[in-house]
Image (cartoon, rainbow, N blue to C red):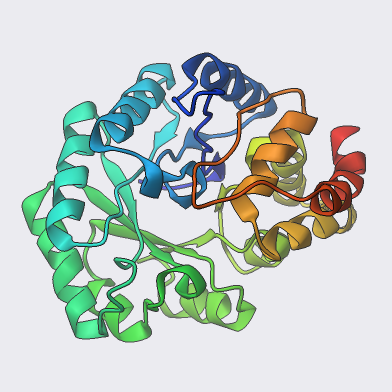
Length: 292
């Protein structure tokens, strides 16, 4: 599968009682579709999968699958701390109708590269599904190294890597080493334009929950060849993106949805609310984006 365009790493809306709010979810998805997103990535870290029961994760995957139209990409987050549970989550996604999953290294355990190779091999052997690797060492405590990517580079079911290390040199290295084998997916939002320049045709984008029109416009403008205009757009987006990367990412994304008139509730514990100062800083950075 060739990945392209902006695919939101979806938030999961919660109501005042902490239950999944599917009415708010539908309103958000409709807004994102109108903005021009090309697919859906539920149950990633932006979706707070770590706080959900298996039943809730299943309900989210089913809801997004039912909402999706033919031609819209569907990529399920199926991460978990143990290989056994990742296989269970991946099999569930496959049963619902997902053909592709997004998988970071299991968190907390800090597996070696050899252990990670066996982990991904076990998932691929257990479930007939395509895999997008997810590199985010700051969160997961483990990196997806070139040793691992070399191992899977010839495997047609390992289709891409979402690169979220924030290190542009690494993205360039991936693009040059694995061209035509492993697709580079933008995952470092404050340098998204740089990723596009170095060959990322797709962007799995948490911020698109609350700035979808701007993100999709940036993607379309770059692909039209208007690099000057794309650079000006990135300048407008940069401050808000950079504030998101500074901490409390999911809380700020959800607050940004509220600013867009699309309230999606608070995050589940242990993620706490934003302070008034944090809200004010992000609200100021969002003003030119709200008026996009």
